[in-house]
Image (cartoon, rainbow, N blue to C red; front, side):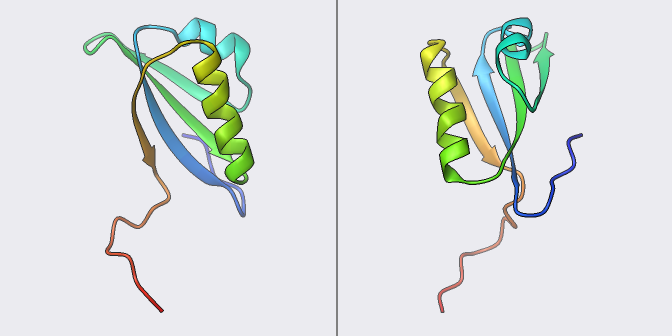
Length: 83
C-alpha cells in the first residue's frame, strides 16, 4: 500500500476493463492492480492537492477510460461537521 506523505490524500479509482499495463506505463506515482474477477482495474493514487487530482482525472479522460468509482481513502467516513 502507498503511504501518504504529509498534506497528501490517497484515492482509489476503479476503471472499467483490464488496463493495468497501459496505466502503469503512462501515469506516475500510482499503484495499479487488475481484478480478474470483476475485469476492472484499481488505481491507488497519492495526490498533493486539487489541481493534481484533476490532472489525474484528465489523464484518465484523455485515455477514454470509464471510471466506475472514486473513493477518498483518507476520508474519515463520519458525518460532516459544521463550524
